[in-house]
Image (cartoon, rainbow, N blue to C red; front, side):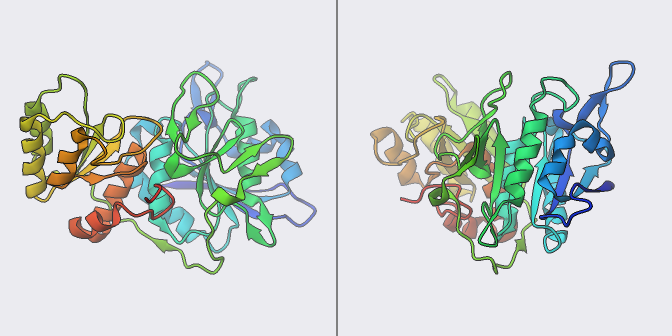
Length: 355
């Protein structure tokens, strides 16, 4: 993939307080209108003209842009690989990273990178906007300024948030705990099962007990092998077992995320259970994730989930669907099905609460 690179030193003539790499993938954030009113990609070499307050951060910025910006609806695992490699290749020379990304699939990409960047000890902050940066009421300016602030923040010489996060509407959320919940308001993201890592008010209010603690000398390992043959089946009243069977027994399928009710409950119908059992017997992973935005899967708590546990369905605890999808893809791509089954119930990047 072709990339464009722009260097901007907002600290001159003083020494910069840190070096941050900004990666622009596409999305509403970096769009502007041409003379005919058509949205076109923003020229980041002009960023200081639109956002002069960047100078107050006194940072040395490098902006890497996808030559052809991508609407996040078109984001695919190959783009995750590109992003992870860019961060890996620039890891030693930068103090933190900000990824500008469309909001629709941001939670998927943030979750994926949390697993691909094993041993991460520097901030990777995802942000975006609901309105283009050139709009008068755009949320892009505040989101970018504060994301850069979080990406460069240090305490006692160490990054304050050494993990993959999403920053939106004054809240810093763990990336692999986040979901997009709003398309018309500025508070686009929520992490129902995990409180914000920090809030941006008059001052930055960090919740240090929630932030992952990583030794500063931890070696970063890049994991990029992905198994994309994963499906999601969302249960609803009246869903026919024959339809489920047609999905989970598709040729090449490696894993199924079963979005169940409440704390992991599903119909006790024999045809449904038989279809799931046949899939499991074929070596297909079936992972139980709740449709609820809060709470967690506890298989066996009710009779309606006891049979899932008996036939070998794996409980997904309080993982989001976004985290479950990307974790499955990475684990199966890196380690294969059997090792993936062992690692799925474990918290690898803070994505679930272990019982």
